[in-house]
Length: 315
Ligand code: NDP
Image (cartoon, rainbow, N blue to C red; front, side, top):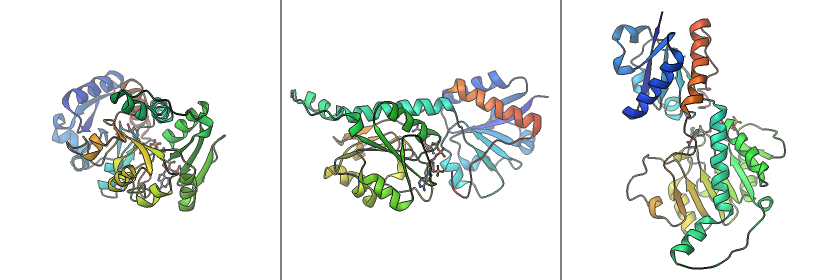
C-alpha cells in the first residue's frame, strides 16, 4: 500500500516541485509525497507524518492525527515557537553534507574578513593603492557561538586552516584543540579575546537579542561578526551603532529578522556590512532526500520516530 504523506511548505512553486520530484524519486512505491492542497480530507484525517520545509505552522493544525514532522531545513525555530506544546515531534534535518557546506561558508567568509577584503574593495572603488599588514591566521581568534552539528564542524575546519578557534555553547563541551566556554561569564570571556565571532546557534527565547549592546561591547574593539544562524539573535540597532562607531569593524549577515531584507534597510548600503540572501548552507536535495527516506521508511516499517528537538529548550 502506498502511503500518502503531505508536504507542507511556504517555498515557491518550482522549489516545491523540485522537492516532490526528489522525494518521490526515493520513496516510491512505498509512499507518495503530495502538496497539502492535493491531499484529500480523508487522507488528512489519518496522516501521522508530514514532510515540511519552512511551513506555516498553522497549516499543520489541519492534520489532527499528526505525530511528527520531518523538516527539510535544519532550523525549525518558527515551528518550535508557534506550534502549541503537544506530543507532536519536530524532527529537523541533520545532514553531514550540510555541516560540510556550512563549514565551507564559515571558512570562506572568515578568510574574507581575515584578508581584509572589505577594505580592499573600498580602496578599489577609490582607485587607491595601499597595502595593509597581514596577520597570521594563528593570531586571529575565531569564536563559534554555538557548537552543535554545524558549529563544531566549522570549528574543526577553521582550526585545520590555522586559525585559533574557540567556542561557546549552552552546555559544557570538550573539543580537540578548541577552547570552549559556557554560561554568561564564559560568553564575556570568549568575546573579549575574539577577532571574528560566528553566530551558529538556534533562535530561542534565550538567544533572541543575545548579540545586543552588552555582548557587542564585550567584543575586542575592531572585531568582526558573521551571522549564519537566525536574524533576531542579533539586536540590529545595537549592531548598527557598533558598526557606526567602529567598535565592530565589519558584519557578514546571511539571515535577517525579516527576509527578504526589506528595501531601504540600512544594512543594504552600510559600508561595513556584507548582505547575503540566506545562502550559507542550503539543503542539498540529493543527500537530504536519502536521509528523509531512511527516517520515513523506518517509521513506515517499525513505527520508530527519529530523534526530535526538545520543545522545552526550543531546539
Ligand atoms: P544544533 O542544535 O546542533 O546546535 C546548536 C548549538 O547552539 C549548540 O551547541 C547549543 O548548545 C547552542 N545553543 C543553543 N542555545 C544556546 C544558548 N542559550 N546559549 C549558548 N549556546 C546555545 O544546531 P545546528 O548546529 O545544526 O544549527 C544551528 C543553527 O544554524 C540552526 O538552528 C539554524 O538556525 C542555523 N542554520 C542556518 C542556515 C543558513 O543557511 N543560514 C542553514 C542551516 C542552519 P548545546 O551544545 O549545549 O546544546
